[in-house]
Length: 375
Ligand SMILES: Cc1ncc(COP(=O)(O)O)c(C=O)c1O
Image (cartoon, rainbow, N blue to C red; front, side, top):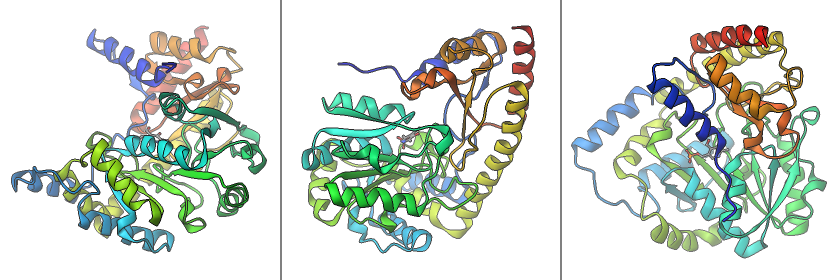
C-alpha cells in the first residue's frame, strides 16, 4: 500500500529519542495544544469515571452531548441542526475516513484536497484505493482553493482554518465552492477541526450555506483534548441511518465517560476558558511572525486561524527537509518540513506550531538565531 509516513510523527519520535538521552528540545512540530481541558470538564471526567460510567454508549453518542453540540451550532453559526445528524466519534480521524469512503460511494472516486494540506487526507484516500486530485494553493492568494480548480473532482475536502497554512475561507468563498458543488454534483467534506481558533474574522461552518456537506470537528484543538480521542461528524438527514451502521460496525462508540465530560465544554464558563487559550495563541503568533522574519524566514501570508506558521526557508536552502532535520539536531528545535504537507513548493517551507508556551517559543528563536549565524 502506497502510504507515506506522517513526517511530523517521525520528527517527534526523533526528538523524544534525543530527550531520552538528556538533550533539551523545543517542540514546535506537533499540532497539539499545551493547555489542559477547562476545569469543569476535567472535574466531570473524574466524576464520570468514579460513577462507573464505563459501558458502551449508543453508537451515535450520548444524547446530552449531541444536543449540546446542536445548541452550540445554533448559537455560534445560527444553524438549526437535528441532533440525530450528529455522531460522536473516537477522534475526528475515523470520522474523516468514514466520510471519505461514504461520499466516494455516492459521488465518485476522485477526491480533491489542497496541496499543501493535512497529510492524512492523501493517505486515507490511498488507503481506500481512491484517486487523489491535488488542488495547488499559494501564499499570494491566501492558500485558498479557486472554484475552477475543483471541477475535475467528485469529492472535495476543505479545511478552514487550515493546517498547515492557517488560511481561513470567508463566507463568500464557501458560497463559491458550494455553487460548483451544486452545479457539478460534487460531494463536500468540511474539516472544521480548527474552528474557534481564529484571529481576525470568525471562521464559518459550511453548514451555514450548504446543508448537504459532511462536517468533521472534534475536541482535539479548540477544546485542547487531543488524547481524549473524541470528535464528531454531522451528516445530511438522508445519511443518518447509513452512518449509524458505519459507527456500529467500525467504532462501536466513542469513550463513554469522556462524552459525559465533553458536555461541559459547551457551558459559557468553559467556553470562556477556551477563548482565553485563543488569545494566548494570538500573542504567540504576534511574537513569532516578526521574530521569524527577523531571522530571515519568509512569512508572506499571516495565518488567520489554527496555530501554525508556514514559513519559507529559501533564504537559507531549497531543501526544507534537510533544514528541519538539521534544526532538530543542531539547534534542538523540532519543526515540520513542508514535504509532510504535499509536493507543491513544499521543499521551500517549514511549519512552526505555536501551540507551545511563549517561553519555549522565545527559546526556539534564540537557538535558531545562534544556529543560523554559524551556517
Ligand atoms: C486538519 C486536521 N484534521 C484532522 C485532524 C485529526 O484530529 P483528531 O485528533 O480529532 O483525530 C488533525 C490533527 O492534527 C488536523 O490537523
